[in-house]
Length: 273
Image (cartoon, rainbow, N blue to C red; front, side, top):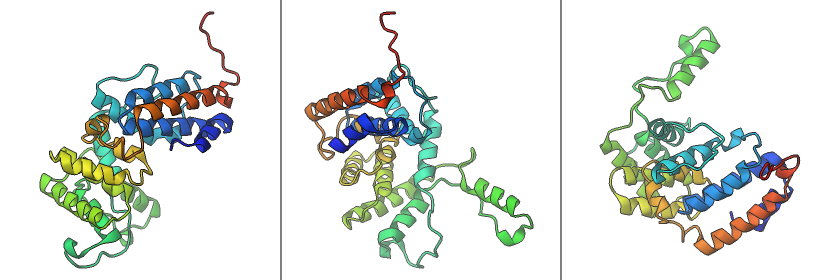
């Protein structure tokens, strides 16, 4: 993430790309425990008062969680902060849903592996919806069918977290995936959050470190309400290749690139007027 290619994107890219890339870098270092540094980079971006990019919504959510865990929000945040309880529900529903349509093998989970085990873990840890998917044959109007399907799948106010037993069972499945060295950033982000929520910090850190081997989407990890306080302690900083010196050195370069970028064109600093 802290690469010369990304510095080049910041200096020479389009505004939308720059906005997303700077936000991405800020979240990456914040996930490693350098939230203050991430905030500083964000504020360098926000000072240009450009339109806030919708594509950063997941990173915005993750930052909201980290700020809640830290107990402080930076000044001039250009988006509305969500309710932390609703974010926790939404993040669970975002990750732990059945994204696959094929028929599951009829066998106990202990006999499953790979994507089948990931799927089983997600189903087990998913929000309890207490409603079945509609059957298309029962509908004459396809629009009604689609609307009812979306209602059944999307998060609703009445949806609940599964009981602790199911969360711990899903955690056990994800720990098995880690033993198999299966590659799934979603699974390990979910597993770290489940472990932290159920008072298993050692397991949470272990799975977070496993996630850090291929940290494709930091927002999935940083958006976990219960794992966030551990992340702020820097428990995966070394795994992400981050330390105080290289983070600050890179951010200085990023800020220089940002101040040379198209973000600055047409922008006036009113300091001193």
